[in-house]
Image 1: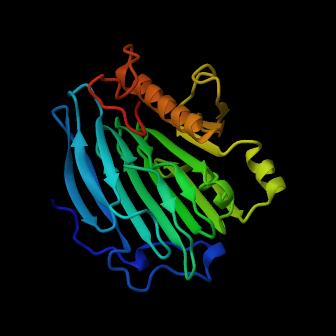
Image 2: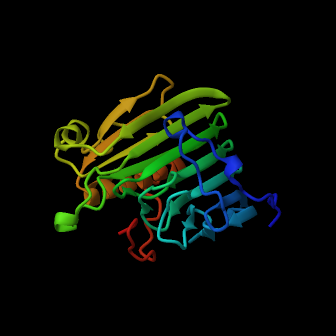
Length: 300
């Protein structure tokens, strides 16, 4: 559909210093891929202006109830998750006036790493007067996995963004075979710039497996944590279960902790409510509030 048909290879991915001794799959066929796409608002209808997709990721074309509603776009992974050596690259451009929510179709299952590491890396550009919500999917780290999530976002001066992350303890409802906090390495690097100036950076590097004391230091008694970055200020009553931190540049960071179902619901519901406030003006409807949308793991 017009996007550069340049194959995505291991050379397109950054390796963090913590994982410099590990590599992506030497044979990238079906293992290393991603999508490059542009979203365009054309007379109130959001469409794909260009698209390139390469296994293991696919795109479900954007769906819209009406011109007043945002477009909903799913990223599809037909495999069982991120295997050892897998690399997924998402390059997303949102053109002026576009309102969209981009989500993964399911949780991000991060399988054990034996010979390398797995990674998902985002490059996002949001134009003026656009409103974008991105919810990649709850990350479920399996025992012994090494995973790097990198997000680089460039915002135009009047662009609006809500980015949400959810991290689970692992596969915990498995009796004696539970894998709570048994990952090898989890690294996240989120960098956001507005008009070329750095406005937010959030990076952590977790080295596992964690014993009970280490897990309690990071998560307390919870099995999940979540976060939202939101452009602009957020009222303290937006969600009673969130810790809200204003940034030096006038934006907001929200943190959540608790059971996986509760954290997921809080992150999604708050993101959709805030997006509605940004786009609907005096009409305070959350995004995707139509009764015609069937319940699923994200929207219930």
